[in-house]
Image 1: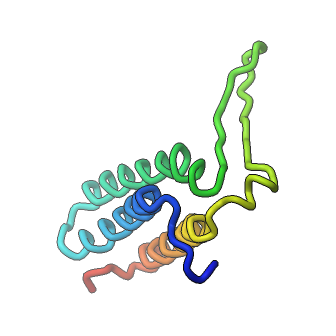
Image 2 (image 1 turned 45 degrees about the vertical axis):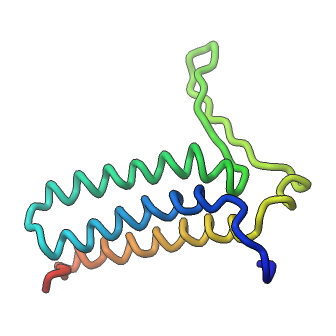
Length: 127
């Protein structure tokens, strides 16, 4: 990352991190105080769905130039379309934005795997 470089899209970066952090924080914190797995599960899945929507439709496109969608061909087959920026456009992407996008994406996966392992091993946040 460049030394004095700022985020080019701070609001997009904020929402990219917000729903990831909200889903994990809600799961961990409410597991300490609420004994209803159903409520925790539903709200956590809802926050994860919001995160998925933000990454797919907003931050993926703005921060790193990725987009994808599904089309139905004339034969009725489902066809997935993926697009990424070319090398010239990719070199113009803000490095801090890109770094934040990818590291929060990877870090969230590891945190979720950790919480899943805790759940499988029977370790609860309140104990």
